Image (cartoon, rainbow, N blue to C red):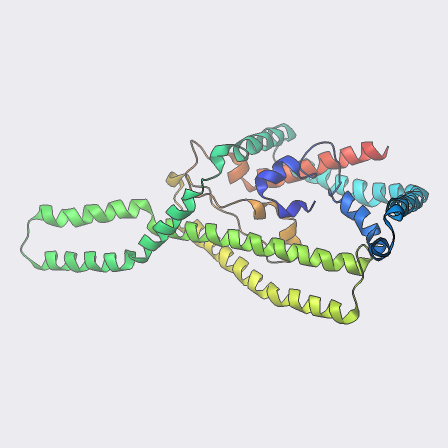
Length: 325
């Protein structure tokens, strides 16, 4: 199971790095086992039905014996480079952070409850409503020009102060709505969905290529490997350009933001593919509705968000250490 290929709500429930009990497992144990059986595909096609189960059983026994022989070295290496290093780094960040562990656990529980709630996910008709808003926004410039022309005509004529006050009052109401902020927010929302789809596809492609090079998957020829590498690299500039555009939207939203609107601001995304794969905010949608009451700390405070990630890493390291004995 590629955990980065699922939506955020699915990750909160099934991602082995976010739930208790699985330690530092990446959830791809079955895929690793299947990669050892790829070499039998050609043999199984040419064998009789009676030999299929026997070949699988014998090959599984050989793999188990090999893994049992190397188990000591694997445990020792995993404890040193996996558990100790990551656990010590996470504990150091928690000790130097300004947020207590109890508060981080409380904020993590609040985040899970809020993001797993059915009210946190908009219905399908919301997409049609957003498209309607965007189409109406396209006519905003024309409407603004008409209003300005009418206001100029009124100011040139001999009219009463009450009539002059009416357009000014309407302009103040439009300013309170924050139309530029809404338009930018909706464009950032749709762009992030597009970035997530492209990034997940790129993750799968690189993962497939890395498995073939590392021997975990069916090896590729030199020519085919070069062709795949060029094809993947060719699509990366478009993804990077989309991320830069999204980050520009985030910066523009921070400049237009008014705290009274109570709409959580989206965070920018890293442009490097490795950092993007490890960034959990990639799977989170941009909030397009005001939050009820005060904005929660897990959504607004960057220190709390970083502390929650470090806390989860420390808990998984402790679980992995107990599993390894």
